[in-house]
Structure formats: structure tokens, C-alpha cells
Length: 336
Image (tube, rainbow, N blue to C red; front, side):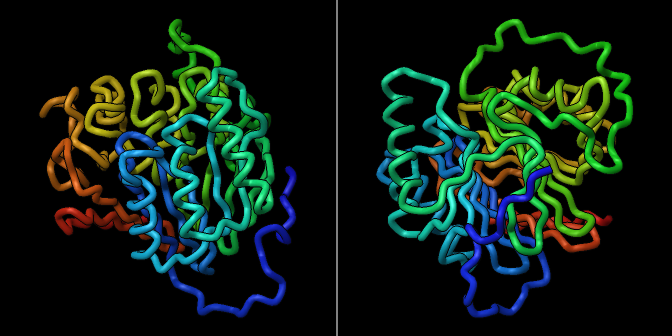
């Protein structure tokens, strides 16, 4: 395993800040894109993706509001899972307001159409102003107080099981490849496992069925986690039983929009997963109707035109955690 040098994240003479007790995670509503802010007890911050461009600065505005609520004034590590517009588009406006120390990605863009090329060139321009690091499965990203491990990227997945993992997965025999799956940036996505003490959260970006299969078949290389960020915005072409049953998450977080992601098929697979207690969603999914959406208390946004409420997860070192809904102030604690 390669551990990336700490020097590109830390300023050698930076004043020591009082350490917070817990890990805080903000799941930001970017209308079916992705943007998730991790704030370590050390004060270091990691932002995974920056949502869309356009919409009168909607997504960058929501990211900045979450950063303000978290007391974050800089981004130590910006992880761009892949170069689609709903993950990298908001970068110019975010970078204009929040200094970004290190840009982390999977390497070169794999899509060559005009729009993809423009977005990648934009990302390359901004990342040249800081430190850019391309990572691969097995690498770790140095955020003080956390272990941030890369499980997938650039079309590859972790080769060997993580410590404590490696159990045979009996459900792999029932796996059927997705005939509609296409090559492209989704399959290049970075996938991360973030650990704080006994707490573990898995975020596989927009990876779909074949990469999920590679991570848990024929043996589960990941092991168990506490929280699963549902893949590809809780899309139907991801979140296979082979994955979600193997990782035994307590809850799932759906970063879906009202009309993007949040598929009935994925919601039902998660809902039926043994041991999974709740599905928290950034949006009520119109396609799912009342039978394939979580109860109101677990929905950050219920209207198609919304204020962009976020979900905040606070994790303690012993593995217990609490999720707070900024719309209705509902919160629920999950014991270890």
C-alpha cells in the first residue's frame, strides 16, 4: 500500500488547533450530483466532489453554506471522483471562495467529447494552482485523525482484501452482469473507505455493477461498514445485493435528486437488506412514489423546488453516530 506524503496537505509551521471530539460529515444537496464534506477531529477537511455549474451558482452556494456551518475556511483535500458535470462542474465558484490545498483524482479523463474535454481542461487549470495527486487503489490520503483509503479508481479495484475482510461471498453465484453498462467516467470513479476509530463509511462515487462485483466477489475485500453512501445517486445500475448484503451497513445515504437517482429498484434492494435500519435521502424521489421513498423524517428535501437542506452525520470514535436532518431538525442516534 502506498501512503501519500503528508507534505502536500500540511503546512509545516501551521498553528495547532484544538482538536474536536468527533468526525462530522455534511451530505450537501446538489440536486442529484454529489458533494460531501468531511471534517476530521483535527480540523482537516476533505470535500468529495463539487456538484454542478450553472443554476445561478446554486451548488457552490450550498457547499459554501455547509462549510460555514462546519466552521471550514479551507479545503485540505478536494477529491474529484470523476469528471462528469455533476461532480466537477461547480469547481470554479467553490475555488473562488474556499482555498484548496490539494486536488486528488483518478488520472486522465477517459471521455473525449467536447463538453468532457472542456470540463477536464477546466479542472486541470484549477488543479495546477495547487498540488495535484492522482491516486490508485491501495493508496491512502493523509487527513489527520482519519484513515482515507482508496478502494477503486481509474477502472481498477483493490487487489487484496483489507485487514479483517476476505470472507467468501455466497451471493456472488447469483450475480448477473448489467448488459447496458457502458465504459466511461462512471467506471473510473474513485471509491473511498473512510475510517475514524471504529466508525467506517463507504463511498464508491458513481461506480456501477461490474466494479461493485470486483470489490466483493468472489470474496468481500471491504468487510463491514457502518454507513454506505448509495452508489451512483442510488441508481438502478448499482447497489447490487452482492455488495450491500456483504458490507452490512447500518444505514444508507442517498444523494439523489427529485428526478435523478433514487430509483425504486435500488431503494427496494437497500430496504430489503438484512440489518440495514434506515435509508436517509437528500430528496424525495418522484419516480419512487410513496412506496419507494423513506418516511418524511429521513428526507432532507421533500419538494422538487427546494432550499437545499443538508444531512449531517456526527461519528464518535467508538463507532456510534448520529444523523441530523437540517430541514425538520429530526435526529437519530445509532449505537455501536
